[in-house]
Image (tube, rainbow, N blue to C red; front, side, top):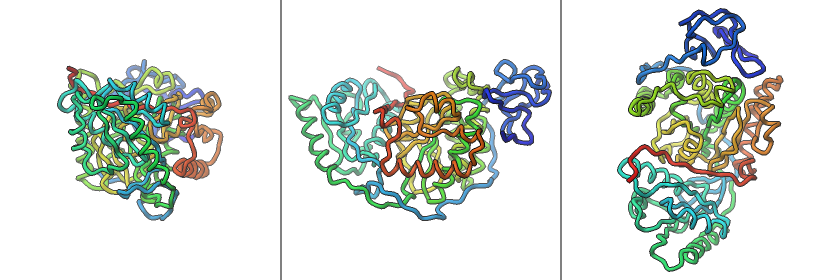
Length: 458
């Protein structure tokens, strides 16, 4: 297994870290060539490194400087895939019927309509008793999903008395295709099932004309996400995904990454890829704002690794973050996106606002226009976004244990399968999914959304 020359720990077959040499109390523990914290007691050669003898150094709002680093090229190749070209020039990789409630109290109506029509109901608990910025976040996320090009038709389902008023949502939505996006407040009709099915029937008729056609690969927006990690996440799956993202960037595709707390401790590495100083400043502000969010709630910014992550071999947030940012490879950092905001132009890496929580993160990525999410996991999860979510295991034992969850086994890298071959195969797999190949989550019928909440509930 490859070890950086400056590393003083190594990952062994059990996924845990062990000291390569004696490490003194207060000395930096180095993995991936970067410090992942400091020893809080003397660590002897061969001793396992754990949260009991390693502590994070993270604190405060952070201080980073603009030092441009090496980046991968963008848009140097031309290629095509078969997707659904929309009236506004956007491209979808699916043509699905979605029902999006404006408020949680009508979730069951949305589910009944979905069962009868074959639609997906994107249910959530919010939209009422919310105020100010918290309500606006819900609206931005819902608008991002309503506009998503993977939906061939959308029924926006409201109650009629909620804080998330249909009129406000339409205003925030801006220009939209009235043929493909329909609205219904169910307090306004006598039989909501009859009227809902009527509107869904109209949308289904329109969608019958949808056909795949050849479109540029540059139109693709590919998102990357870490699930529960293990000691191999930053060695197998995450760097593999990073190389695949570099391949997509060569065709001019856009890469989306969220999980801002899982950038904490690896900010300088990520920010060194900013295309210019203005981009550096905008992304740094977003990261600092999320650090401030932790501080405002009285939480330490290093309090991230979950029990599952720790059991898998992750000891500090710096360690998880340094593995996490590898998923974007060396794709140039081109901007920061707020909730529901999509990139202004194709190509490059964009950091999407939001936490590391799996359900919230995949929702934020979908709301920012991700067509497909590459989700790395060392622990395994059935969770999927409403857009195709391709699960990539960090180790082969997980892929063998959960073949109905895992789409691609990156653990084969540990068995000597060449990295360039694995990159080619995973890149081809992604294009196949873009052209209609179902992910394991799609075969299982799994999808969820969860909306970020940080405000008063009335």
